[in-house]
Amino acid sequence: MNIFYFLGDSITLGVNVAPQDSFANKIYTGILQKFPQKFSLPPTTLYNLGVRKNTTKNIFERFEKEFQDRNFPNSQAYFILMCGVVDMVMPENTTLLSIDESKDYFKKLLLSAQKKGNIFVSSPSPVVNEAHKERIAKLVTEQEQICSDLHIPYFNIFDELNNNEFLQDLKDGIHPNQIGNMFIAEKILNHINNFLL
Image (cartoon, rainbow, N blue to C red; front, side):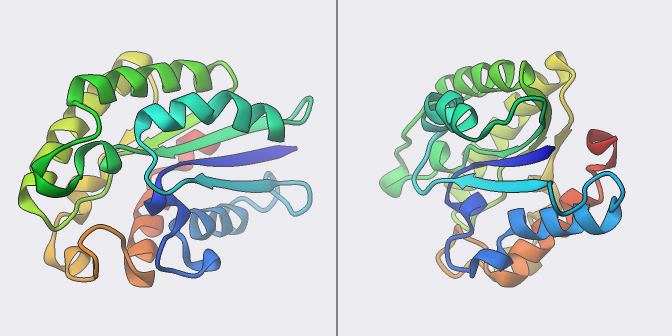
């Protein structure tokens, strides 16, 4: 059995869109279509473990239990992670985690997941607020280096989506709408092949 675990915050969860329109569901559907022999239904399974307002620390702290509650013996786990926006984006130019705290929990999360299955990491997506976006960009650089050190594939979707076409559809300045989720899914699907083989 192959099990896909999408880990992240409200952007992964798909806040403001129907469940079938979240980028996690669109990636999962795309994987099933691209690799029907390897990932067939049944028994391939998807768990969208995006949670609103979750920092990288929150995701790390719940990861072990989330995995143990859903794991099956002899199953192959595939973890797709996007985190960091909640760490860096808060009202009045404050943050929930510093960049150093965020990257420390990010590394701990990767080391834990690495023991359990294959990992693919996407950078956090851009937001409208320039100060918040600048912090996210700095975090992306740190995440990318950690993934390189651990030999984990990392896709910088922040740079790919930091344009008016994506940003103008963020009605609350943070969460992508249906079109934005489609953009995220399409770009990740174009970079995920080696992770799945």
